[in-house]
Length: 388
Image 1: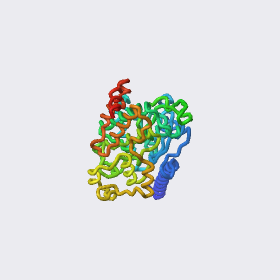
Image 2 (image 1 turned 30 degrees about the vertical axis):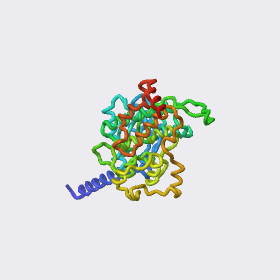
Image 3 (image 1 turned 90 degrees about the vertical axis):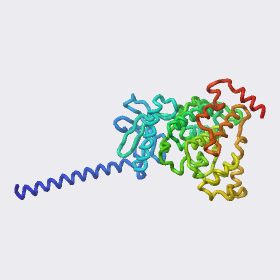
Image 4 (image 1 turned 60 degrees about the vertical axis):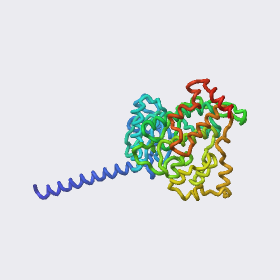
């Protein structure tokens, strides 16, 4: 081969490399152009992912990414919810863990009898893990907010509570703790409502027509054998054992459910705070002193002095807690039997000691739920209340 031919061949080889590098650079730029600075996928209504999912609207946004409403053209154009995870390593890894939990739920509950949201599919779209779900409606928090925080009627609380307890009991039976239970993570299947005149408040209120709910967001769900992070749960629904760093397991979910049911009943958050010591002070105002065993074994001794919570009731924070919190029974809206039954259940769910806190399998057998199984079986409780 002559010198001229070698030069020509070498030039062609370099041109090929340059072309490949150029293509690679353009593809990378294309990926960058798809994402915002903080990793969200850039999209608009009408975009189609995977030649299948047509984006209609944004349903919500979180630290993990966004949830959008789509038409699934491979399923007759039916509506689905698509969770689009940020194109960042830590969120991709978290999404893989969530998918593992969702697959376990689908495997153990193929007929969807336990009120957990159903994953339909998942795929990777240019670095974004995407998970498809059945399309649901408003969260129980969003409905409460839209209804000017007017409480849910007690018969509706009963039905919602039974489904929530069943869903989380199912998780516990399968060695899972949800760890982030809150009204925002409980969604109505259908949030259509009727307008009812509230004579006491002298205004119209929204009354949900169907209280069927689904439990969602398994991004923080933890198997019993997995590493348990020290800090879990959204602040207002965080159990005392977490604040005191005593370790946690299934009972922390039960505490969260107690806080949620109170919020449905009262229309406001039981523990409205952002500070650990203040949170403990609120607990003591509502439920009495923190048990000595929990104080003595806590890693957070800075919150205590001589075996008691180090709290000044005359301080600004102390006056706030005193004005904001009162013993749990003082929040009763009625002395009717079913109201007392609910508060008996709340007291068991909000016991300080995780070991004595009611289990959800026991909670499902609580008299508060009797009307769902045996209408008219409340006479025993009426007799008990008369004797008190």
